[in-house]
Length: 123
Length: 123
Image (cartoon, each protein chain N blue to C red):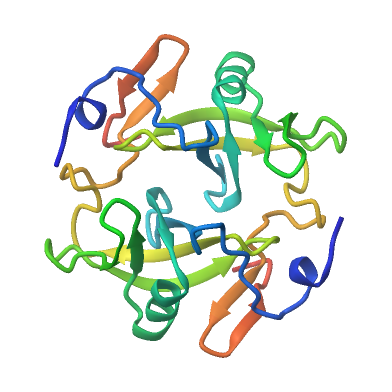
């Protein structure tokens, strides 16, 4: 169940049919998940090369530097890739709220048996 | 740019064309990202209902209880959903290595300008 993509040190991303990887961003200091988005090869190269997170917007079909309009950029501290090279984990320091709603993280609601409930900021 | 799906407490997942959400699992105690996979509605319902992470395997086209063969189950502590309800974040306690390679986390390689490099377990 393993192969060179899994075990080796060859960078060989497994893009999906749209040419995208899943990208998870966590807060480099607080550790929580801030957002999940997608990167194409150019967005990943810019993220690695510039030290600021870039994504591919599926809704706008455009390259997107996070914070380019809001100023809430994500300064990259570490980038990792998973076993089958179809997902990356970016540890970053956020310059402000990451979510377009103004929340610190996009994950501000809990899923439970009864449905959704708000997450206390201290959780 | 916001709507009821973003702001409300109505559980209204935005499944992709294959009926899937992205699922990010972090270690509930250590905080690092362990794996990224996908859930369909049934996998999410089982995860919420049983307290153990379930996924949809795209390669096998089958429901999959994590650890059903390895014993390395993921005991759920918290489940959150993001603003547009197309990704969930599961905080879990792993019963063993999460990755099929035997690594604690699937994210055991760093992406840098020079390519991939192994991540020290202490990182």
